Image (cartoon, rainbow over all chains, first blue to last red; front, side):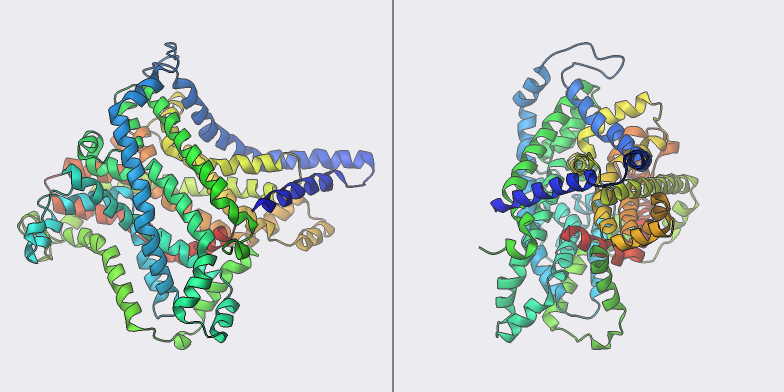
Length: 331
Length: 290
């Protein structure tokens, strides 16, 4: 695990050496240098400009406005120090929101991960119509959150299709108020999230399975390993890096969840139904109520939470993947 | 290496299908159940548009009986719908072009030039993956407002390009690194400048990666909700996701029409994706392998 560090360092040093090494006569080198610099500026400049202007700058700006009580007009002058942050951490609504986000994060991993691995293993066997199956699995992921929200919202209404279906197959006793009962609503949200995003996990895992060299399976077959032995000893360990990347994307996605909740529950109902997230809290208490300073502070808190979790994850989980995919799964 | 890797599954699939054996029935059964679950709600939305409101109220889970084409006809005849399709198309196409052009140029520099700040520049873009738009949305809104781009598609397109760049660059850099140095040297011997090499060799050779990133950018823009919600408040500038939501709350009693509007609005992304599905899976294979 620790030998991941030295190679990276060496590569950088090598690059530097190579850049400095051309032994051309001096004046000419200066001319090519100048030209190279122009090309770099010309080609990379626009991307850096747009990226810094619309990604980095707003994030920095959020950090600045977070220290002000500011309604969004004119310069921010009412400096309040860390007051916004104090309010955030004392607000019980924010505690709820953290709890919901944590719940969604853990359950997304626990529900989608195992199901997606099993499905990917099944679909990776040679069966007919595999490419069609792949397209169909991806459909929920391609559809926009608005459509998913409206469609599921209508289906899960008290007078909607789900309750109607339960009635007509004789399970009327299971009918429930899927969206507004606080003890059920977040489970409904989990069903919708799993439905929408599991296709992405399956496709990602299928892509990971395809990159496992087939020689390994042939060798296992020659050694007389059964199908399940092969999956356990070869496929799952080698799929490890893909699963870890998926988990990372899923964690970041869970922390930022906004669209589905906002569309299905709207900005005020979400908190009473117990499905509000950090992002809906930010929009409801920031822009909607005109408190841009406070909204910025919530954004900063959200960013820091995501950053800390991402760094911890990269440090302790993703790092083993830098050793190279073939060796990482083994002890 | 990545480029080769992505092409293999494509070629394998184009071969005649005769060699593909039928697998076990259990596999088909599981696949069938899973796909039914995936498609069920989508089919509910599409079929719901063919019913009328009394049918939906009386039996929300039933099938259209009789089939009713008025809802779809009305939506297709409404200028609002087509205006929103147009707005979404402009935003998605401009975003895609911007992301691909800027991303390819920057990736070329990152993949094939040696210079002092290269590592820092790559980390800068890679760090962008950690800044989802949700975090930056409040100040982004203020920035766009100060630039005078409220209610204009430009105010949606520019930030979308910026937030699309990290993924694009991370997918494209391996593609460009995989182009052998010999090709570049040969081009240099033939008297092609580095920029000439970029336009004549790099652009065509990196096409598979470009298509993948282009589709991702297009679909993301077509479906994007949060940014338009903040930037576009004037009905005339609405993109489809905002339009669908506005329609759903405006006609909340006319469920059938809402369903028709909703299903029509998902068609373009579905078609676009179906056409290029293999490219996306191929590009993801490359990305997963890093």
